[in-house]
Length: 636
Image (cartoon, rainbow, N blue to C red; front, side, top):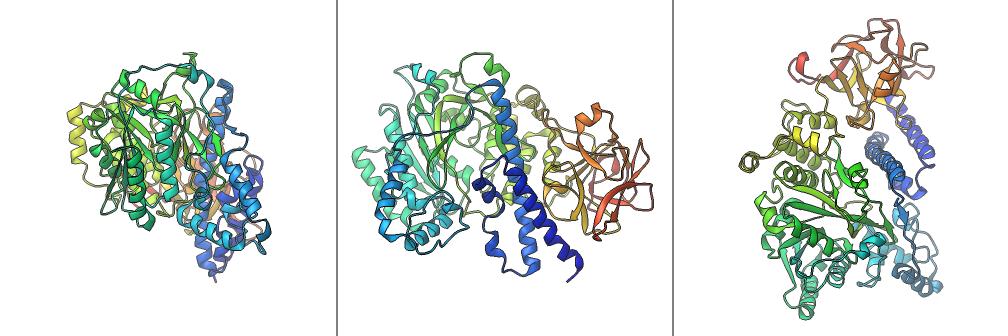
């Protein structure tokens, strides 16, 4: 076996161990294990080359999760400066989950397991210690099939109580007795039956009868047998008690999330529709703020505030108020509350939001007028950003309503789509081409895709472009300036992608995982820590493209002494007059403009290549894609 393949394993393992130890200070053991190890040990029997590939893929997922966790930490720190309502664990006495656990403990006392069958399963980190071996097996099988604890869900009451997580001032608000009618659309595909029933029950129990006109279930071609005749029987029972309330629409082939939502909207007849996932539990008073706000302004698309139902224990975490945003990959995320909202001194006031997270409510007719959801979006991902851009650019607005709260069940994994990146990438390019004008290149850069001849078919967009023209929509430049100024596009990048030294083209420049400040050489793969962005002005970013107002990208820096290059926050480095400007052309040296030293690589005492700064020799570098002044986009 080549020596490079042997070296790759300890490097990856070392990175994982270091990442685990460092982030243990910030995250629970349960969270870290979910991010890093998962089912990795089950894969150790693979051949070394295959295990090696698997670990690299795991690192790619880890990288995304750590980036999301970093963003969540930054959000929490900002929120703490402005508001006391930070994320807290909701505790309450004799919650149905705890009651069920107590009952289960007494029932299985005499059947204590002889063996822990699944010590590495995420399901049994905080739950299930008293289950018999047969019960463990059943619970684990259901967990792998659905991604959450169906075994526990099947034992919890459908009408269980969850804590009211609203601010107390929400309870003081009053609403008109003449609110619009509400239709609720529940989208599902291979959901557990008890989960769907609990969603339905919560909607019926926590929505005023005179307001709730219909509940429409849309089945996007489930294969789960209990969602056929068994679900139909449950719907009949509901309709016996609430005549005509429930209806179900079944797709005869898989159409994806956006088209499933469109199916529900087309069938609905209520004034206002709330489009929800089927794995939710609405909270008390959730509907009235939605209906009142849309009654005031039919062009507003609103989102409730999410709380989290843990996938294993079904306990509820209260989430802090936040607005819904996205990065240049169009990954959705939570952003800090705007200062303008704090200036209102009203914690019940609607919050202007750049985007929605997925669950939404809208005036049914208005949503149809602006084109509903884009049915050309496939599978999952990006449809929320597409709708948000269209609403803002075409005369509407998006808001989060603090007094409307919905508990959303967290999945540990999505069993129906093990790799969503293909659909996410494809959908992101579709959104960029339709709505982002001269800024669409930022999406290509963030995903590390060639702008010319990307090889990705994002579908026919002619009808959506015609819709944009018909609605006389504003530009994306207007959106950035008036709605989402924290996204900062870059126009002077001339080279991007993975960067290699001609000494060994199996290695790429890479941002070390833990601190993010160390430049390393690592075996080339598709993780975004290996993305490099060279500016015409001389900066050289290493790592995922951020390009935002309040978070810095990392610039390659010559500290002036020593041979180790560093990665420094770009704005801070510029303020401190560090050496962050480089001369580079593909196939040539990378030379610092101030120190005249070159970025090169040499072998350390272990025989591994490391990046160094030294007097220039004949070493040269290539970069994956070039553009603008460097000529046509091409692959090196």
